[in-house]
Length: 245
Ligand code: NAP
Image (cartoon, rainbow, N blue to C red; front, side, top):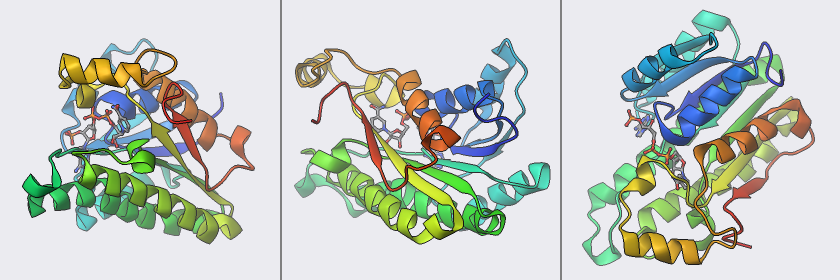
């Protein structure tokens, strides 16, 4: 039980990578605050799990400071502590620069980057007081390489990497570790809309030859927030089948 007696907040956990992380953490003994704008989907899957989980859900838009604050307070009211934050909530609004609206730019920055900032800020008080904690940001290899048609998404994910490294330096003296996982192509709703041609082109760039699963990201997340990674902070771990080496 790597996370016994730990309390974790996982944002964007109603499906995909966030849900896989929440489920894996629960298996390792963590109590979970699971949030998304519509967490109902997660509530129904929880009922199908074979083992009992200590989990509550909250309807939150991570780009809204008051809602984030409410979610953190709800977590503290329930368990009194927060040990782990997973900034996973993310969206795409793809388009070439010349056609990208300011709204599409702003929405992606607000959810992916400002959301991570707001959630990190909201949990930091409690983590600083207890002098321990782990924050993990789910960025993307697109934040390392850029991608035509995803300037908003790439900027938000590169921003998350800067946020990770800065907070790692800032919070290390309080024994709070901050790391990031950068997935490549993972089979979730986010990638299910890709057309066959784009999928084949992507596969051609992956040395391991297949898309990853949400569970692959969850295992990396588990390692980085656990005591097994106790001397690791400020790092970006790629889970990408060798796509960016
Ligand atoms: P997904 O299946 O689309 O799930 C996204 C999750 O985020 C959902 O639970 C969604 O729930 C939630 N969400 C979206 N906007 C939100 C908001 N404003 N506030 C709170 N929750 C919000 O995506 P995924 O593939 O699992 O991706 C998870 C993370 O991994 C994202 O940050 C993504 O950028 C990153 N990533 C994914 C891949 C990939 O290939 N799939 C690759 C690299 C990085 P609601 O809609 O109910 O809010």
